[in-house]
Length: 103
Image (cartoon, rainbow, N blue to C red; front, side, top):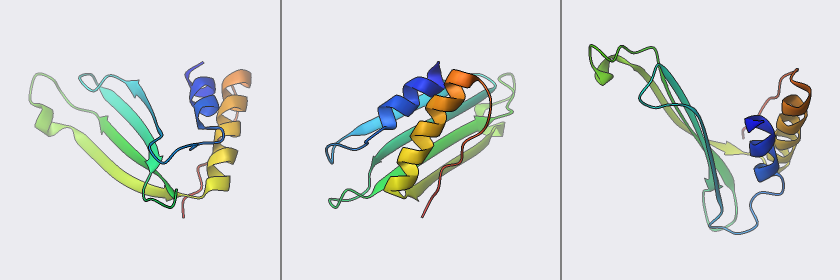
């Protein structure tokens, strides 16, 4: 359900330079969290995805003990459409995998 929704939001993205699609999975205050933020990276309409992940930390100790990852990846526009269609198919069939092609 979440994958289908994200895939549909990303089809034909972006239509304006200010368009942003953001989707998160999990809770940043719990055991694991994943956030995707798709946006234009310049005035030419090049697309990037900011990926943020937190994992495997103990609330009782400190938020500083968790593993963290933050990256900004450039994406091929045709690759994003392929990724979006793959997300929709995977979400509807509940099987398979999908790969995002980065530049």
